Image (cartoon, rainbow, N blue to C red):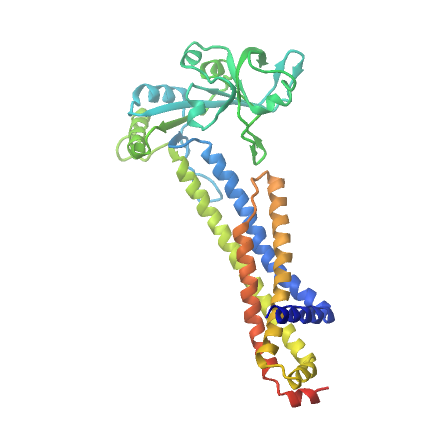
Length: 412
């Protein structure tokens, strides 16, 4: 059985070599369809991995109170109304009033994204992000301290001149020494380094490891620009009470904003898992588009594959007659053409998978996505090309098997 299969594969390869140009064109057409499938799905998976990890960095069991909801309307991305910023007074009042059990509130704002940090005679490029935060910021955003310690309640309340540095500072300012206990300068204000954060990488060109965290009141004294928008994050210890904590937060913030019962919220509220679900729905649309594109392309390639096999049957009519005259059964003839069709299909599948992986990896490298091997797409591509080859080869194989041996031997 195995010897017969090996012989059929050898005959199939000989036939492919004899009509190389047509075979290459067919393999390319099949490869394009698989390329579209594997390439798009691998890029979408990399995008989903990256965005999901970024939103997961908000921390487990958290929700944010922010200026707007996540969505924008369809009129060119413009918003129907302008919500007021989340001001410091809003934040202070919310912290004083909101007392839902088993929750903790984090408050933060970004002072600048173009700061220059100095240490002795060394300094960074002016591209450091500086955030003012309270003592719950790290836990609520799922950020870990790799070295040193986190802010304490007393650091925040006493406006201590201490700071936490992102992981990239270990590569530049403190490449050859321990940053803990050292003094750095931000906009002329000196801070003692108490902790180094774990690396979080970068997303869409935004380096999350090149940042400095300082106590929020100290930050407010340094960054005094008007209309600073603050971020409020609430972490719930028990996910079972998430809905209750969120409803209480909405009621509290509506009261702070002075909204009457018939007015809509002039702020947004987002849960970390809601964001991930929305991203999943968007990537689901992209995956569906990838399947549609690839199926249309593969359908065209199946027609091309069927045509090339019909031409092959016609060109090898005399050969088929000789084989039948020597005792070859119909099943042997049809199996030979089936295997030839499957071999061509798998060549196209291999080409498409290689191009798809390279495309997904290239896109991930350019946009700094978290690339992972698209195993599902690769397995699906292999199965699809096998089925397409069987369907495309069924008619030519049946036609070859039914040829009359006497008439075939007369064929010129």
